[in-house]
Length: 157
Image: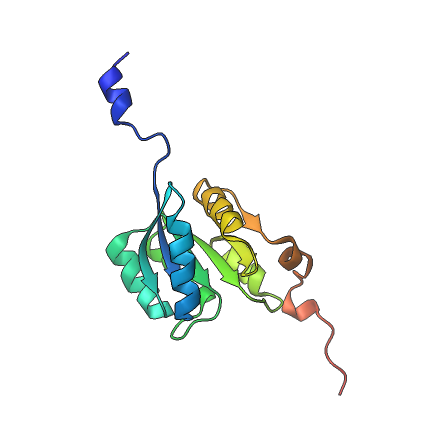
């Protein structure tokens, strides 16, 4: 056995993250909390969907954590674009709330995770690790309301 080769291998490879949220305070607080995790490294932060694409191409993150609503392009459009441009970059959506059909659209376009902003930093880190490993993680509250928009009852006028 080659002991030198073993010593050069990291026990837990670092997961490189791109965080995107137009709320500066929320984005920077999230980046600070996730940076406390030994295996997570925030390599870029973006405030708009357009910035996400530019920074993702420049930094090649392993996982992009995207706000659903951002100026320029929303998180759903960014998921679709990143899936085309950087298929190795796993994507996930973080949102305060989702409209019917958004979860299905995100999953259809390649998102591996869809969670509420009410998750703790520890839970978010666990979801990021699962998404990076190729698993899919959906917040149960969002999954229960997962009806395509055309199947929802129309409001009475």
